[in-house]
Image (cartoon, rainbow, N blue to C red; front, side, top):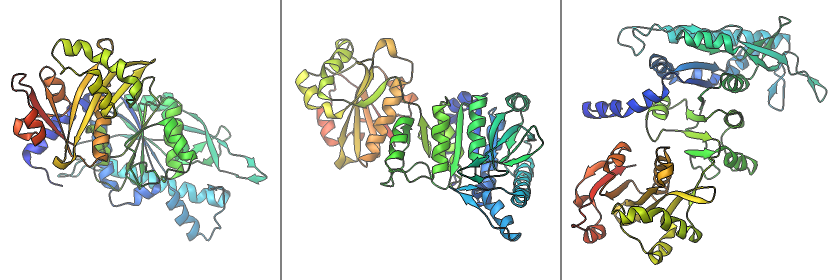
Length: 436
């Protein structure tokens, strides 16, 4: 997609907060051998190079399963698996080393490319790899000897951090080495997960053949808390592949703040996920100490207490208890230890294809911690589910906050007809809209 000059400038400016936020952070990127064979893979490499240029500490973990399968077939070796895990005998191990070495060389070559008129021109990126993963044998399980199939014993965090501190990209292959001089075939999911945990990475980003995590109704789950995701997995309501789900849930459970799942087939998915407000894939995080949920009739008193000071100061339009009770289904709240500390309402105008965001309030003691942004994210999810593509807001005081969230100033003519008729010219509220 070619952007107009104005759109390109606007997009670049809007990405600046994310560039500042990600600089100096450690991201572990995981993709399988299928991604490497996809036509979009060179674009992924360009985007990884951009992350490095922007000061992100990047660790790349690649797989090689299809490449190993090809070499096993060429040598007429019988591939043996148990519960989806490859049994790596001596002959198969040679295929593993051949495939992993070939893939590693391919990735290193792409990251070294610097032709004029290419995104990599002038990058001069260093890629470091080596014996950074210490492995142990999987051993004998249920009477089956997995031979040279192994598991991660330890990640050389000191060695990796030394390379990252030098500005290099660290490349980890699905192989590990033992103190006895043996080579083990590892799953790249295990390597990526354990590397992210050991390095205390800020993000684990998993590339999949899908845009993200889908439930059984083929709905893309944009943001989901780990316990909720695990419940959906147990109930069989998730269609995304098990290896991806295991990497996401294991890493978040171990303390990784955020784990993302994006498509390796979609050009620019990595940049869109990291540098735009809405992203493109799925985000998994640990459950919040504070609960964001739909309001119930029992929340009316708490909402009234929260918004009363704002009504008295004129920031919000006064709402009676009766009105609030009748509209409670339109409200979203954030609850902390039983106290409502933030709220907002979403009123749908389906015939006009828009919705109103109203009664946005946060308790004074809990401002400045992105609670308003959390509510806005939920509002956008609800609006999309209702096939709404535009949200508007009327405000007299907090215009700057809505502008920071991507809203744009609009005229009263942008309001639906019903809302125009109710507009209070004496109050003279400013109108802002957001396309979602």
